[in-house]
Length: 202
Image 1 (cartoon, rainbow, N blue to C red):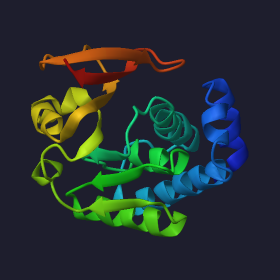
Image 2: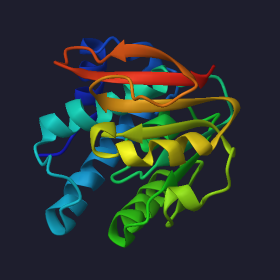
Image 3: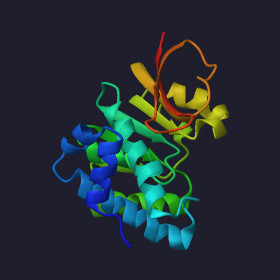
Image 4: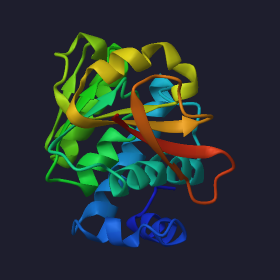
C-alpha cells in the first residue's frame, strides 16, 4: 500500500497542523509522494530503520510539518546532516517562500534527496558535503534532528547561524549546554519525550 494525501491530512488533524498543511495547495500530495519515495528507496538502500507506512507518516512527515509550523522568521534554512530529509523536505514543501539547503555527505542519502527535490519540484538545493564545511553565519535557521546522537556537532551547527538567526533542534532530551543561547521548547503532540528546542543567541 502507498501513503495517501488523505492519510497526511488525517494525521495533520491529530497533530493540530491542518492550517500549516493548507497554506500550500498541494502540500498533502507532495508529502505523500515524498513518503512513498522514502519507502521505495528504503527497501533497497536502508536509509532509515522506520519502514512502516504509519510510522513514516507519524515519525517523519508529521515531525517535519511540526518543524515547518514552528520555523523561525527568516529567508534561509539549513538541514544539517539531512539524512532522509527530515525536517528539510517538509519545510520546503510547507514553507515554499524559504530557500532550503539540505546538507548530506553520505552519497546514497544525498542521491535520494536530489531525487526528491527533482521529482517534487522543490525550491531546495542538496549539498553533498559535510554541513560544517559550509560558510559560517550563512543561514537564518539551522536545523538538526536526533540531537542526542549529534551533540559534538552542535558548535559547528551554531557557527552556521546568521546574526539574529536560530538554531533548531528536533529530538529528545534536555536543552543542550551551549552558550550564549536563549531557548524555547515545544513538545511534540502525542509524543513521550520528543521535543523541538529553538535557540537564539543571547
